Image (cartoon, rainbow, N blue to C red; front, side, top):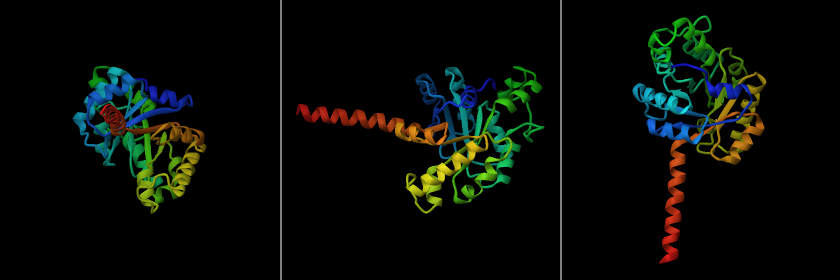
Length: 260
């Protein structure tokens, strides 16, 4: 059920927050991230395989351990966005937003009237209509939900000033991988031209009073983007699994060789 969004509170204070895209539709993975002290998890319903039911399970797990939930929602349509938000996630992250008009459409899909056009029902996010009065829920949801739009094409970078100025958008996330291929540098998210574009968009977002987010795969990247003004920084849950497994396997192989 919607309540105070600890992620939004930290962003409002100017704090840097760290999270992970969870492309593995596992409530257990979400709980582990929460127990470790991560600020947020992004339930990935774009490049991951999470559906509505698995999203709801992950939200319940997150609530149990006090980690904020975002959901990256692949299909940018009002009815589809509404269904994921009804599970109780604390924010929507919408990919491939390329213009101010598209940004405004996401506001309409995520916010209740009078801010947007989202439909209302006694869903899980509203305590099934018995956890709190629906009027109170509408006000709380409009205040606490985070709307994040993703800028990840050259067209979006060119329209960044208009996108970040859209009222109702809280957070602008720059997707380095998609941006790199759009700019003609596929698989090179750290190409100088791509890095410059990410920096440009981040500074525009901050100047417009919005929060900026992107990928930070390690502590060096985190420090770099924090210095630019980015606050919302994430990597991927599979990257944690890969790093831990690789370190374990390599260490064991080295010990085996040393003892052989």
